[in-house]
Length: 428
Image (cartoon, rainbow, N blue to C red; front, side, top):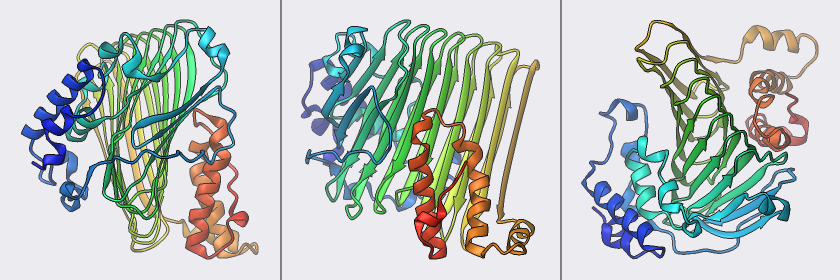
C-alpha cells in the first residue's frame, strides 16, 4: 500500500470531524481490499493491469477552473478543481426557494447525506474516492421546487501525477424537478488519475435529468461511478457523453426502489487513436411496476477500444418490471475493437425484459448508396455516423448541450477523414 493513499494521509485532509472519520474508515477498508485484476469478471476486458496506482498522489494544486465549452444558460454554476469547490454562482431566486448548492460539509445533514446512495454500490475506486474526496458538493432541491434551467457543474483536474476525487451528491425532493450538467475535463499533457463519484437520489414523484460530459485529456485515467436511486413514481434520466481520456471507465448503477419508478439510461461515446472507453451498467429493479430503458451507442476509430458490460437485475418482489438494454457500436477502422456483453438476472416471472448488442463496420451498402449519388466517402461516413448517434443526442436530458456535443463528435470525425470540423456538423 502506497503511503500517499494510507489512512494517515486520509486523516490529514481538512474538514469537519465526521468527514475526517469517514475518510479514515474508507482508507482502512481500501487498504485491506485487494487491487482488482482481469481475473474478476467485472474487470475481464479492462486495462486495469496497466494502471500504476503508485505513480499518482492526491492533487495539491487548486487554480482557476476553465469555463465550460457549452452554449447553456444555467440557473446556477459551480466550478471545481481537483475535487475542490472553487466558485459558485447561484441565482437568488433559487436560494429563496430553499435550493442548496455548495460544499456538503457545510450542510447540517451532510453526514447522513454523503454516501446515502453510494454506500450500497461501492467498489475499489469508490472507496478510494471516499477516502480522499477533498470537498464534496451538494445540490439539494426541496420538495415541490421545479427549476426550468440546468445547473452546471465543472470538474477540472490538473497537475502531472495528481489524483483527483470529485464527489457530487444530488438530492431531488418529492414532486421536484431539476436538470444537472456535469462536465469533466483535465489538462491535455498531464498524467492524471481521476476518480469521480456521483450520487443521484430522487424522492417520490421527483424528476431528475443528469448529463455527464467527459472530455478529459489524452493522458488521463478515469474510474468513475454514477450511482442513482429512484423512489416511488420517480424518474431519473441519466446520460453520459464520453470523448476523452486514455482509459476512461464509468460505472452506472440505477436502483429503482419505489413502486412505479422509472430510469432512462443513455450514452454516446467516440474513441480514437489508442483510447479505451469502458462502461459497466446495472439496472436494478427492486420494487414492483418499475421500468428502465438503456441505450448506449458508440463509435471507435484508429486503434481505439470500447467495452460495454451491462446487467438487468429483477429482484423477487419486482413483479411487473419492464426493462430493456441496447448497446450498439460502429467501427470506423479495421484496427478498432469493441466488446459488448449484456446480461439478465431475473428472479420474478411477471416481467418483460430484453437485451441487444451489435458491433460492426460502416454499412457498405449505405456508403455505396450515398457515394453513387455524388457524396464523397468522408461525407458519406459523416452522414452515417450522424444518423447512428442522432437517436441518443435527441434524447439527452439537457437539450441545450446538444450543439457542443455535436461539435465534439464532428471534431473527432474530422481527424479521421482529414476534413474541416465545420464541414462535419451533425444534425440529430
